[in-house]
Image 1: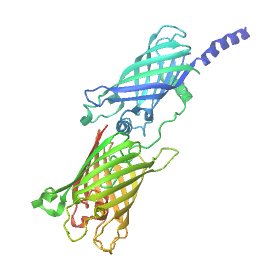
Image 2: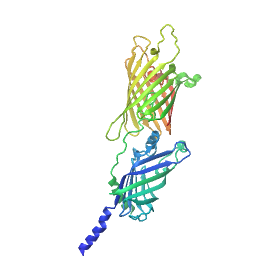
Image 3: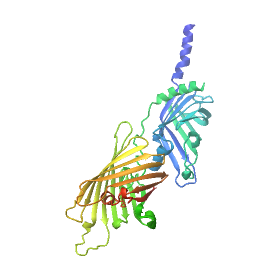
Image 4: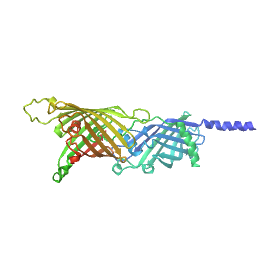
Length: 179
Length: 273
């Protein structure tokens, strides 16, 4: 009986251990949509992400210096004046799927993720929708949401307020493979 | 409950480890000029920088001259990034109607962590005095109108607020007023900036000249503020030099701070990309 329990326990645990999916090449891009001619937009495709299917936990790690802009001066200003990446080099999101993430389902699932965004030294609880699907044993997730600079103590001076919007549109794309 | 899940997710984060990112130091100075002299900063590839500079008359000239505001000398320049770390420029100065062409190169960039602790650039310029000839006795040779500067710019951003630059300078003149004067001389520049906020910094600059027999010029000392707004940098300053190119402010400064013979001036730069 004891042996049976142990066997059952091992069966239930070992798949969990193997249920972590990870990438170091996820993509996060953002856009500040204003009327201005010079659109403030950047892309970072060195983002780290891990999902633990056993409990639906997930974590993202974004190096701020890895955001690239078309205009070099914008990149410098982004790092020096806005996100202050010398003081806050990384942003993280630590959260959990609110709904159950079904493994091996062939159709796309629309799920909700809840967790804590840590950006510019400010932690904020957030919930946003994520589209998830399975492709050849990999987990593909995409998400779009808005961040407000003012929520994260990122100050936009009046003089550039017509060029940089307080609302930043963020898009996340990740393809995670089994760890 | 929340704290427990955060702890589990921290373990997930630790799986990712620290990722390699670009460690190059940015923003050692706000502008491509500290005040009068060049800084290690330069426009990036395919960026065009337009700089317009003014120096008014001396502040001690009194109310009749509106403390110098009635007069102004100016310099305008275009700097273009041919590629990352290679910049060419042209400029025109009202002082002696001088034209300039210049070349700026980046040799080394300061990095956080392992890597270079300083940024190093070089600056080279040729100056052409285009004033009409007054002395009709002497031969009018084009080469006698030429002078040059060569500089090595060595800068370090010590922390987020403080940057310092050393600027060994060599000035070459094809023609000097008297044979007893040196055609070539060295100078050492020191420039610094201290950030007061994300967009405002306090700057200072000094050039010490070596080997200037029979020439009675003072060393250039300048203090000012940089104010940055998007693609513009505004620099407002007080300086004892009216000239805005190296031969003029390093080697031909006449003003003395002790006499109040100082000039108010500004530089405005705008990047086009």
